[in-house]
Image (cartoon, rainbow, N blue to C red; front, top):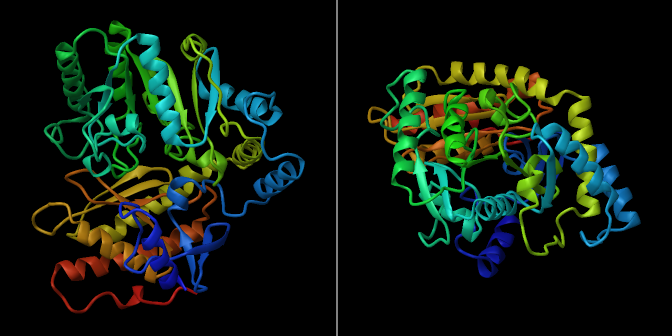
Length: 447
C-alpha cells in the first residue's frame, strides 16, 4: 500500500519535498505515544510530527474540543470577534513573561517568524537582522534569508541584510575548546565586531534558545543575556524563536529564553508546533508598542481559527494541569542517562546533548570526527525496523539524530525507546567498522 502511494506522491509533489526512509511509511493513526502505519506496524513515536504532537496522539481533551467547536462553526476569520482566540491569547500573554504583551496568531512557525521580522524591521526602520550560525527559522522567502543552515536555505536572495554571529553551537567551531565563560566572552566580542561592520541601525537579533533543525545544539546558559546587554546599548530588539523549545519541552524552563533571563525577557517571542498538538497554530507575542507599530490594515484569514484556538486552549490546559514540563525534566533526564550509557564506547557517536525531552545525538565517521549522514540514515532505518520513529538534522558540518517524544512520555516508554535506539546505534557502529555482523536485536518487526 505504501509503495503505491509513494509512486503517486512522486508523480504530483515536488522532488524537494523530503521523505524519511528508503521505503517511506504512511502513518494512519495514533494513540498516546504510539502511531501505526498503513501496513499495521506500531511505532513508539520519538519525533511527534517534528515536535508538533507535543502532548499525546489522540489526546481526548483536544479531540473533544475540536469536535465540539467544529459542530458549532469552523471558520470566521479575524474580521469578527473570536472568543476562543481571545481566551488563548490571554493565556499565552500571561505565560510569555513579556510586559504589556499583545498576541497575533498565525498558522505556522514560519509565518510567526515572518511576522516577527515584519514587526521588528518596521519598528526599527531597518532591514538588517542578526541571526545565529546553524539556525533554522522557516521556509518562507524572508525566513530562508535568515536561516544559517545551508541545507535549508536554497537561495541567497533576500530582502533582508543578514549578519550571522557565533554562539548557537557549543561543541564545534573556533570557540569549542573554551570554557563556558570564555565561550560567552568570545561570542559577545564577535557580536560587537559584527555590529561594527553594520551600516546604520540593526533591527533585531533572532535566535533559537536550542537550535532545532541544527541538531538540538545550544550555547551555555546566559549567552543571550550577555548579548542583550550589547543589544540594549544599540536599541536592537531580541526575538526568541520558541517554535521548538516552548511550552516546557526543555524541562528546566517553560520557554527556552528563561535560561538566559538575567537581562530580562525578549522583546518578541514566536511560537508554533506543540501548542496545537497537531493543529496548525503559530503566533507572535510582542510588547504593545512593537506589535502596534504597523501603519496599515492587516488581518489573518486562518490564523486564530475557532477550531485551532479551541484545540490550543484544551492542549495548554492539559499541559499545565498535568505538569508536563516537570515530566519532561524527569523522564528526559532518565532518557538522557540511558542514551549516554548506550553510546559510551561507540566511536560512531561524538556527543549526546540536549535538555528535557529535546535530545540530540551527533554521529560521525569513527576516527575522523567528520559528520556521517550515512550513519544517521542507518540509525533512522534501524530504529524504524525496531519500532521507533526518530528525526535527524544538523548543520553543514554535523549530522545528528533528533529525539523529541510527546511530553507525556512514561519512564517505561523512555526505557523501551532507549533500548531500541541503542541497538540501532550498534548497527551503525558495526557498519562503520565494516563488519557484516550487525546488531540482531534491532531487526524485530514492529508489533
